[in-house]
Amino acid sequence: SYVLTQPPSVSVAPGQAARLTCGGNNIGSKNVHWYQQKPGQAPVLVVYDDIDRPSGIPERFSGSNSGNPATLTISRVEAGDEADYYCQVWESTSGHYVFGPGTKVTVL
Amino acid sequence: QVQLVESGGGVVQSGRSLRLSCAASGFTFSNFGMHWVRQAPGKGLEWVAVVYFDGSNKYYTDSVRGRFTISRDNSENRLYLQMDSLRAEDTAVYYCARDRCSRGTCSSEYWGQGTLVTVSS
Image 1 (cartoon, each protein chain N blue to C red):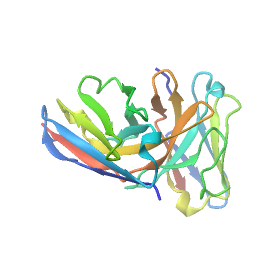
Image 2: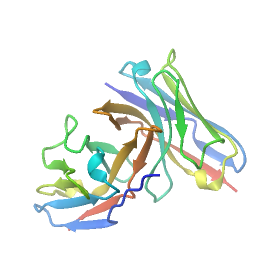
Image 3: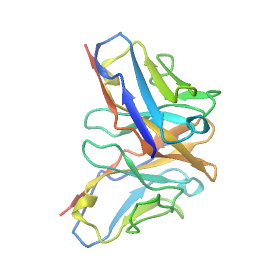
Image 4: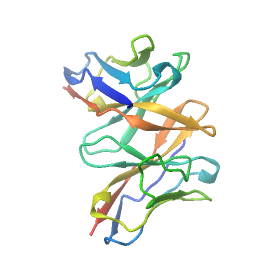
């Protein structure tokens, strides 16, 4: 089955940009979705279909997927962005979600 | 507004059964596929199962296939997960999540708050 890879952790200073990556075989041919999860809370979808944001998600969150890897960029990082971030793709043949292992973002 | 509320979690002995329920409101339940996703303590998200909007198709991750059964009652706006032959490694918070499909792909914009299942040996 399809495997996604993510770095375990990323550290970033407030006001700087954080770039989170999501790798997979020929990932550019898939649509990648990104979730933010804070401790004790359910995941929140922050980017879907590579580049789109659900209503209520700040413009500081942006996605791209022009090849390996796909990326989620958090601009002007704030303390409240500290969380785990998961990428996800959908396997059309089986209806499976595939999640990456997650990246913990630490705001210095 | 969309609401998903899970229930049915608890502590259960290894080998026993448990049924989770997810009550949906704020949308036309019968129009959407529904998923169960779990998260073991301190671990990442793991997709468990999906049932299509009309119940016609059901898929499972390999580790639960044959032990878990996903189902739905569109007249009651409820999603279920029947978990049999539970193992210690099934210990996790279980989330229900609604499909959001477009351009030939799916994600989940709406999630419940989760229900904790603890399997004791």
